[in-house]
Image 1 (cartoon, rainbow over the protein chains, first blue to last red):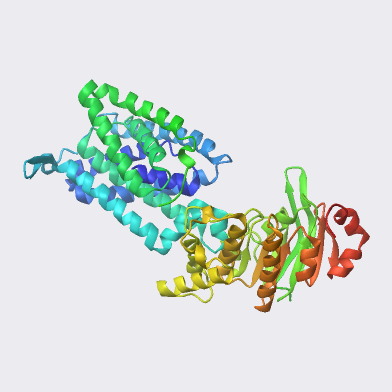
Image 2 (image 1 turned 180 degrees about the vertical axis):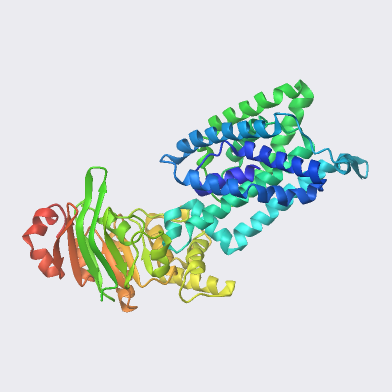
Length: 267
Length: 243
């Protein structure tokens, strides 16, 4: 999820405050298909990813038209889009808590003396696979070169003949596709509800600050660290403290890294 | 037919006119210098000619094809290369990868094999004297090295025309001598060049013809000696610059 947020920030200098809501939307789409057709969560991943393609095109179109400074105007626009998405999801799914309660994912996987939840293992394997594939795509393909160059300097990229609009559009499609698929994984582990995206967006921002824009391996490491801090918080103080602790980490990260979100574009 | 032609190019930023009906034509294999005081509209004219800025009115034609109004990457694909006054390297990439971007996306003389693209990028780095910096980060280079890298990136797309924006500014006397050599080398290769420089003396060494821009208009167009002798040039520009 944070990868998508970070890629959008890199390629368009836009802070997508609706990122978590798009993940929740993916979760709801996945839930609906699972409940109606009984599709396996593994099959739901690409379906939910594709379902968010129209939203990716709308996000790209809207954010391309925001005035300078992009970072600020995108905040205002996507805050509105976040509220709109929450209202739409509340209207469609009536604000009820939904879970993809797939029994096969609830079972535990025995690794020696370790008993691991299958759903969490699936999420971890999917995250690792996505980071690996994305790293290969960004560093070894023509598309990756276009996206990296566009993230660094769209004008300079256009001067060497790169279709910067195409690179940007494909990044939005990929980022929101990842959000859709993440939503399915999220819905297998947590109850989804229309307001659940706020916390997810907060996490994406914290991870992007920690890792720097587009640093794939750092995003993965930061994700693991954030997960551990969250788990310790919940264990020690209870689930009510999770959100305030993430917000405090965001504040601390911003104070500690004056370069903030715009720092670095390497992969 | 000129390789590049700007017809009646005007650009206004709000109420401020940066360019006012500029007509400019560059012939194939010609080296043309553009002079003008700060704020005269030189970089704005380059942005319009290079397809990065849509003019308020007027048109730009490159090899018989109208490029105004099209997307910004069209000019690069058709064969216009460009450097910036303040170098803009691909900061997160290595020096070699920066040049590889241009080699990969070129539309002429493309290489299918990655090894050939790499060899071409290394050849271009050798041409600008950066072969030993291939592995360095582009953002870590000195100003002079960044300008050379930008030239290599501009050459990487095999352009027919180069728009060079103050390649020599900010460089040491030795660096400026090297820039003069670069111009000579590019001219030998048959490159068409339209170059902005602050130094009249440097441009006079390399240019066939010079244009002088003042307050958004071309006020003088001719060979260097004629430009130097022009009273309008003295009034608009040379009074404050080295002769």
